[in-house]
Image (tube, rainbow, N blue to C red; front, side, top):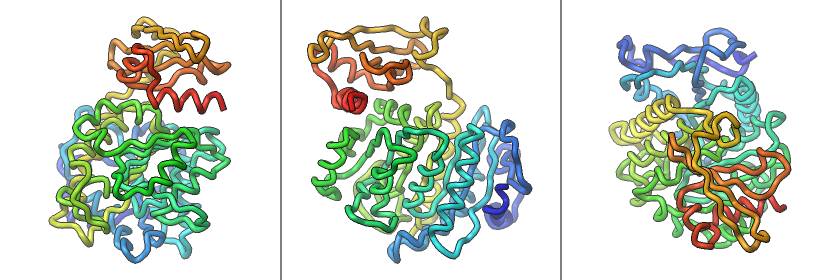
Length: 388
């Protein structure tokens, strides 16, 4: 089934025609040679998409990125323990961009059904729409985190582009977008009207300055996400020159590693996409190495995944529970659950008929705000969505 959409990467090219050593990631990767219907023997899938036409002339060469990233990634030493990786290869070239989207959606849908996380190596960031549409028929409400220096939202644009793809997520009815977090955007690249639109929908916009040097404190953003889309331009130019739009500010490359590690640790994240890497503009593989290192941390984070949740009855003893009353809700209590094992936090809202409708990841600062009689923006937005 999958083979009709995929082709093997050039193994001689990505390995430089040299054998992998036993301690290198590439030695342990299984490449898809024939159709595989049972994914139970694998922990993580990888797929490349050499598609950049929707990025326009400014970044056409980002279609070269998947194999260039593989070259650096597969030469890294293995983490301990080493997850079992299945490399599905690259989506076959298509005559039209829409054909690429359809092929990617079909492959991702199949992987999602098999319940293993997948790394998507782009290509341009418009592929995020396919990453999202792959959930159609599988889940009704999807939470998305986008890590980018810009908010790619252009009104009244019918065609999907790399700088306007968000409109198509916001307008989606199947699956429906439950939550969106724009993580690390930079204000001087952002129209305030766009911020108003996202705020009016009770979604999150989190500025770069809020999260610099404190990425681990935002773990709940990634615990909430079903999928994560990363534009490499979120990293400052000196750390990642292989990008079309150069800028001196952004995350440091080690902060990208912290972000992807949180993605790996989140038991909810089913896909992570890395987009807009342009090898033509790169300097001595700095950008592809930065991405490769971040993927290594995704693997390491994966080894720490647990199904920890206060929703699971036999895990209650693993949590400390704090009760806070809010006058706006007729003193109905909000319960904040703090894990004794991971130190992660959840908030239980006094809303919703089912237990799944009440529990959401949050941070300690959300609890602290409630304990002082205030409601953090994160909790306020969760309440707003559940009331509507």
